Image 1 (cartoon, rainbow, N blue to C red):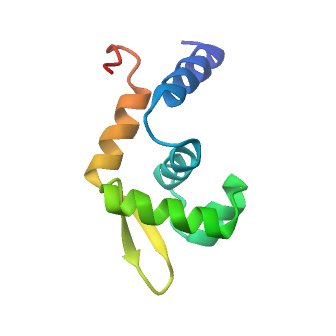
Image 2 (image 1 turned 120 degrees about the vertical axis):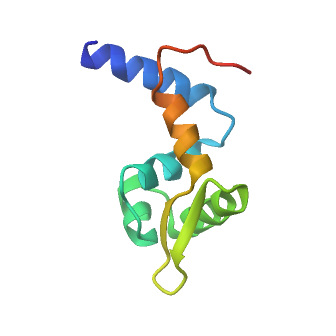
Length: 96
């Protein structure tokens, strides 16, 4: 698969995901290894308050989990790993 094919397929799946654009962006950032709230905010371009809101909502949905309240650090939870796995799996149809 060429890089452009990969990018188009991934972006197409991301666009059809039920999460809000900001929540999807934060989830992908956490999945890419960004754990710190400030790093996520800086790298995504989301304001600190929007980033905090999205991180809290993703925690409540069970997509990510907080590993340090004091440092505001996050990692993917099993549900978030599964959602990202589906976004990257181009061999199965999207349902919904």
